[in-house]
Length: 350
Image 1 (tube, one colour):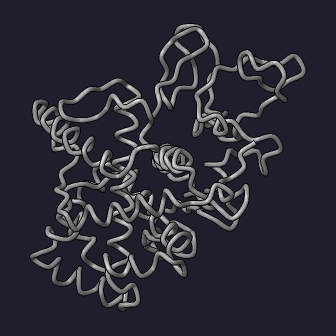
Image 2: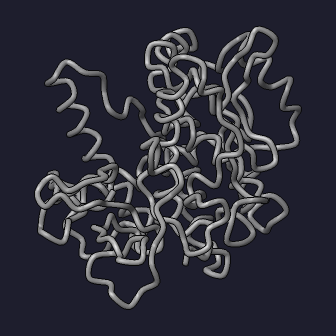
């Protein structure tokens, strides 16, 4: 995450909607990848502070009065939604107590996912809008239906119970997971979309199969076997997590999520001027210009330092994982796939 600054010089955070120093309204402009200060126009609408030549801007429909979102829309945005909110196809019944707050948390996590995908210049759909691309449904269990989180044909379905910290902790403990967050869950499910979008039917398949295995293995049986018997004893030698050992699709999705963890965390550390011994954080270029070896050489000492900081506060490790050589090879594969994405696939945000 970048460091953002208001026109008055005040430091800002990604989710801010108002500058506490000057009082100006704030919004995130995806086409600039910046949190910007706004000023009202006489004829209505908003203008980015100092940008007098641009057309009036529109706040996302979820900006007010719900406070769900703090992004700007492209001119003429369908439905009045920003590019992140437009990806949400279904939401829970907001008339049920507690659902609004859970939905709000889900959208906040999704905006961070979308920010990271835009920063990596990854395609969100086949065109400017995600009608046929990456989409989300956030749903609640009912007496007659239990929501199963997962991905199918670009649609990520997530049970809103994942946004309940207590409920998520129970699931994490029951599955023996060292880490389970909303953002991590969304990154994992998005990984399935990007396998289908970037790897399936491409020249990447032979290398994918050499590293991850045959994706044609029966998926349902593999998951049933994993949940019945658990991960094989040697999974730490080959995978980023126990769940990654269940099937090549899950290995890819887990590795993809960890790659996004690494890229976003390093970019945030660099933007905030965090310096860690033995980590090349002082490089002039942002992390999207680093080669894979540079990323790993920065990541390992950063995680060691931050894990120790968490322990100093009596908290669990921020990154409770060990990356064996085989997992690093898989991460490099993800890095190479991301780096090869054609610029022509990038969404048009203006």
